[in-house]
Length: 310
Image 1: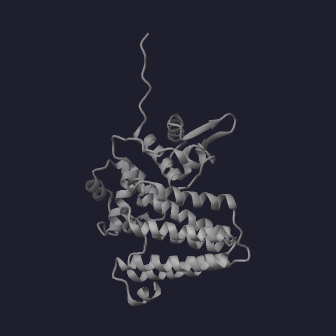
Image 2 (image 1 turned 90 degrees about the horizontal axis):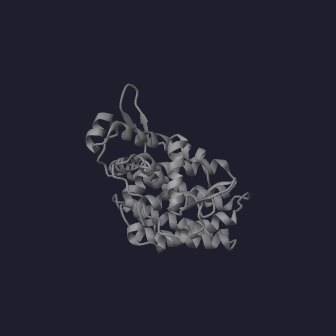
């Protein structure tokens, strides 16, 4: 009897599997958390079939576990495992997504571009390009122009905009800690602490800009949810979207500023866990002032920012 080989996974299935791993690695979901095909399919803008195949690949590698009549969960052994990306022989939409963000953040892409220009620049087929563009659209970073082409949406693309954004964050993030409705979810806060600790324990090569951004934006949004104020949460979500280009250009690789940022945020978590929100607020204000000065310092910071960082 002839043995038939199992079909090879498609580029899309491998790409989704790696995106799920990035989400786990970046702290978007933690050990023991439930993953559903429907939620993941909506998150990545695909049907359930490639998601189902991606989950199976991750189960085969021990990163996920299936429970009878319950579904698929992140393995509790994940913190002790090395989460190596699955190799994909072809360029993926995820690769293209990161290339577009990096090039836009670095000033290498114009505000408005056509699909033809993008395909020529990156050598990607239209199907892969469209998947990347749809992801950028879902995240509020780009929109289709009337007629043809695509246009990047407003971002923190000037010193003044960046400075004002940090000042705004100082207002809402410090105020959130003073809200009378502020209430932590201990399990979520402890999980966030472990993510920063795990990030610091990684090799420099594994301390990527995308992993840091996803972990960091999730942490700040979590604190805003603890405030119990929906408008503060919405404001933070908008800021996270605006920050994406800035973060990718700022953190092109592992550096000392990222490490120090993680340590400052761990101090904030420790203060909140101790019930000292007054101290946590002071630490948050200091953290945001330092981050502001460092970000604008890369763009010749105005003297006002330099004074604020003191």
